[in-house]
Image (tube, rainbow, N blue to C red; front, side, top):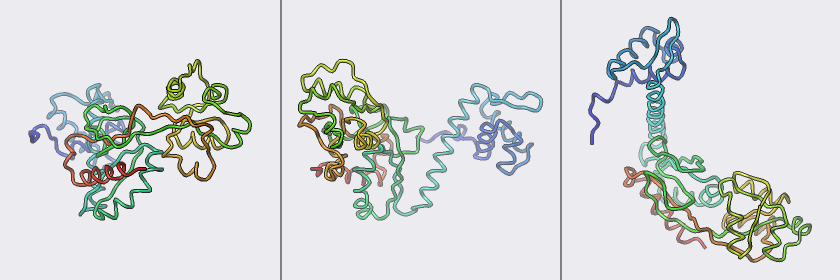
Length: 298
């Protein structure tokens, strides 16, 4: 449904308002957007007339946003950011389209990035831009067209397609294992463990899956799998890692699995996107491709 024109103020007014709101000064805004201070003031007055309420409190030589003005400024700044991103994406690839994809750091670097050349070879007109996101976000307030999500199949305001499950295994260095013999799963109760911030109960669930009461677990906290893997390689402890993300380290012998005690995670990897982007051609092509890639994962 088309938005009524009366709810779409002219871009000149929005640019003047965004600059003044961000800089908290009509004079500074005028210098930034190459207008006079009086022109900026007129643009904002005209915008306030359209809105039917003041955006700024004017006190002698200073201005400050009203509460409603501050909320409006945040949304206008996000909208202008999306317009800028869309324009940049179009200029970078005016023929095939651009896909802005939010990824999980280690999944993106270890699994997705090595496979992306295949996608680009199959779809030479499409450009993919990658950004990192660790948790679900509001697609309406972001420039991403889609995101890779790990967890349960729940993302408010988004549609999700299942990609794959994962199996996690304890992993440590050879040197660590020499210093801390680990023959059975319960032996891990007595060695330093590395914990991922985004999965604070992962070790508890692993112990419970193997019939062991975990009690109080302590150890170093890290915020990414890549850091956890490197910490384990450095001998700082045992990390609980998805086996498919540490294949290279296991093959090189940088990491080893001290005992045969894998666990399939209850959560999974999903591709999420806002409903209004479902038929966006670059996203549709990427969805079909990533499904083939995840289905063929050994």
